[in-house]
Length: 268
Image (tube, rainbow, N blue to C red; front, top):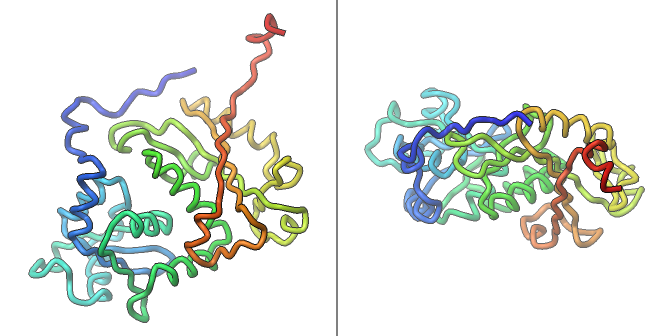
């Protein structure tokens, strides 16, 4: 297997990133305001706050000064006090990052075009905008809570990639395919997603084992390992329109390894 070199060049590189337990209290004191618009979450923050978010490996600086000013005006009086609008930085959060940040940071407020919105209404909007959001968030929360840093795995044909440390220091080591578990064939037929999921025995679902093998070969070539994460609700009539449903999901991790007959022929 081709080895992928690490990005970090010295201990000094890693020392600039504070531990999560030191970052979160500071972020809580910032009293962040988040605007929900165009299917994403936006913040207009000072450079120091943007650095804290980067330190925590959440969000991306996107949109430029114009987006920062527009977001700031939408949110009303700036939480930065006398800070000039030209000094604001625009940070974009994914829906999964926004919900996780709301659980991790105190004193965070969400706003929409109509004014302040609750975490429950935000969740409701995400669920209705993306049928697969709940399973995606369960996977994100699962890995983030275990100390991994999840990012989009789109460039590798997977749902997520996982980093052991800050993405600026190391390459990702795992690619994740999220496998929603459903209860019956009727559930699969009623699903409108391109990948409605699988039964526990794997008889249904548009993702075949040929697809999995193709993705696994790609992962091997780029020095990563592939994991299937099965996300299963604990009851068939679970209400997914509220964050309370998160307490009723179970996940199972399964590593995918390529079988090389020549390497095991003597063991058979």
